[in-house]
Length: 153
Image (cartoon, rainbow, N blue to C red; front, side):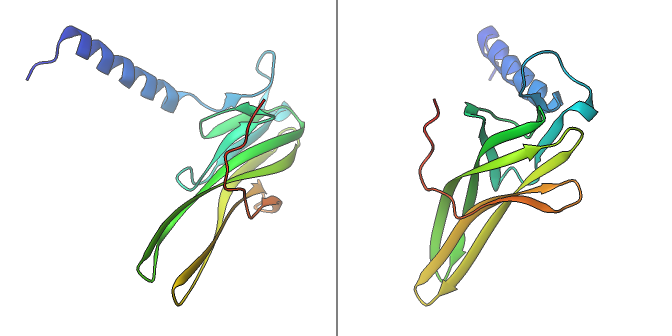
């Protein structure tokens, strides 16, 4: 079955958006022109399937990496846990708030922090996230996280 001109245009627009999102590097989350890498901090995701950054400093964001101005930042992350234990299936999303003191030239990685334990007939799941610096040292922990999506102003 052949596509109409409109369908082809729509398909190419979707592909262009996907390629642009993949090809673009970290998003700049500070005002003004781009600064040199040693003047900003990099925040990135390690496992975007299990955690993502929902907002930085009260503003929604998406993607897998961001350049931040040095200083204090409020990071809202969303952690995801799912699976099954003892014939029980579950999916949990938690929203985590943490503060990051970003140093110029530094890199930070947000990783999921999921704790599961099962006993006869019940499952305990705590969802959270951690931020590691470039040496692998934990610099911030948020756990357990809230079950409701935050309201941003």
